[in-house]
Image (cartoon, rainbow, N blue to C red; front, top):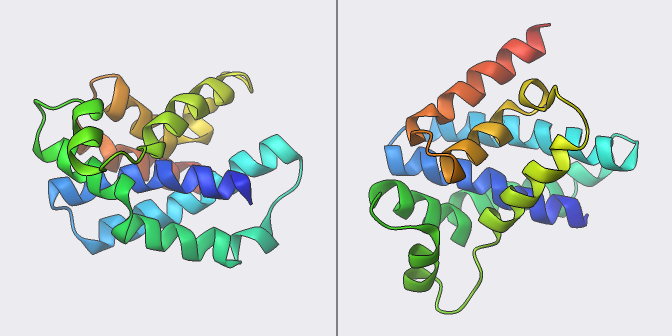
Length: 157
């Protein structure tokens, strides 16, 4: 449950990138769907079991959808894409009235954790990797769609 609550914020960054680019609801739906798949993979990797019952509860898919359409992480990521001269700290201070932007912090920690599980992290978590690369490595926000394509290719194998 706690992992769902944290990981949804990373997916919401991807949804915000999508909104900031004006990519539309179909692309955002793909981000949410693939984000849910990658959330499940992380939870399975960490706990050793696939979290079907957790994902279908309110703390799973329902919370993910709500966060990706209206949450502060999504809103801040959209603003970040539209205002490239501003950094995450500035966006957080201007938009959140003292609240914390949890998606960026979780994204940083998730990247560290996933690296401990082996070298195929880029293949196993293409959306999470792209969100990290956009948020912290200077990748263009438009590369968010590459995570969607990579995930589809992974599922075809």
